[in-house]
Amino acid sequence: MTFSTLFYMRIKQGLNSLFIYSKKGWGLVLFELMGLVSIIYAVMYRYLYTEETSLILFLAFIILLGYSYLSAEKYLSGAENRFDLLTGIPPNKIIWAVYGQVFLKNISAVSLFPLILIAATKTISPWLILLIFFVFPAATTLVACLFNILINRYWKRIGGFFYLLFLLLQGGGTVAILGFLLADHNLSFVTLNNLDTIFIILILGSVSLTILFFSSTISNLWKEAYLQNDSMNKNRLPFIRFRRFSRLFANSFIAKEWFLLWRNPVTKIRLVVWVVFIIICSFTALRSYLHDLTLFLIISLAIWLFCYGEMPATAWQNEGEQKSFYWLSGFKPSHLIAAKIAAFLPLTVLGILTVLFLGLVIQLSFYVILQRAVLVFLLVLAAIIISLAIACLGHNGSKPTINEPIMEQVPLTISAIAAVSIEFSFCAVVLLPLPWILLFSITIPTICLIGQGMWLSRIYYSIGFEGR
Image 1 (cartoon, helix red, strand yellow):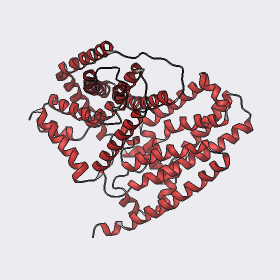
Image 2 (tube, one colour):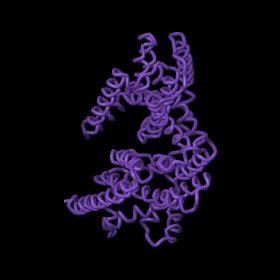
Image 3 (spheres, helix red, strand yellow):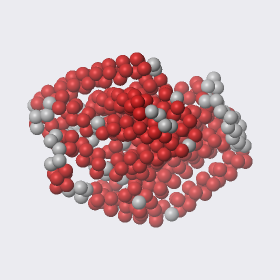
Image 4 (cartoon, helix red, strand yellow):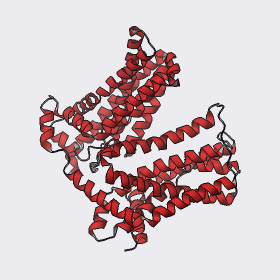
């Protein structure tokens, strides 16, 4: 079997799952069209326009690299690779098929947004623009796949750190571009000409050709890493450790949630990143912004959201088909809701500690720190409740559990992604006057709790009729 045949089979399988067996594909197409039209409109009327193409091109590479790494993690560690290896397909052909899959994922309006901005400036000739649209996604695909293979082969224990790093590159690069274009600044960057662009293309082209030349060696490294990590995942954390852990708690459901969170290396990495952010805000120019109440709350919530905002949003996507088990065990929807909220209550403590540390840095009085800590606690608790309520909408139907620890805390389902987005949007209420913040922080979570209870009751009472 040639790699082109394998690539075609995988693409057809992906298209069938999106358009034939599901309607999500049409939603993605609509989203891409809306994004493309919005970008073209903003560029045509110069809402988003700059001739400082050197920075935009650099951030374009960063965004595509982060986007490619996330896709490479998905396809290089996919379960279908095990079947391909067992059927005798050479690793080299599997790797080439993955290259094609990751490259196609890069061809989207969101990931190519910076390159569209550069094309609108008309400072580079059209044929170089077309070459950039091919070379940048191809080069970042190959580099990201190489990084992922090396990390999984030699640094698997800190693989979660690298996943979060590339996730930050993708999101941070996009935010940096929008901030650079929309905010007033005194920064100045070089405008690239045709000669500079050719030089950059030659460098990326040479790097890409080098990776392709050693693809046989790289594919062998991938096979070793894949088989090694696959065998590790099957024997991860024996049940006896959970049994000892659960004896410390009265509620077994909460114990299960805490055990799953703490065994995941990404949780520990989040704690390290949280400490790093607090240190950055304490000893850099950001410290001067902490004296303003609104900016203090924004920075505190931003740190919490970046470090822990994804965790409640992914609380339901990892359940798989366990809803029937909870139903048979006598768990009522109200019990599940209360247990899920209680399981993520420690995250509110981290929000309070963020306020405490930042308040001590700028030498606020204890009473002022207490006031801000209570307000952040209320906002964080409300954000957790809202995120859990939105995420539980995906707790329906039969879905396989996620067995990859790195992916357990990454929003993968539509409901989880929507939960993260709404959670971030809700925290924008911090810009409103205090009475409105208190009103929204109480009413919206209450409505979400009522709606979540009604939704879980409906799907739980339908379990008894699913098998008939």
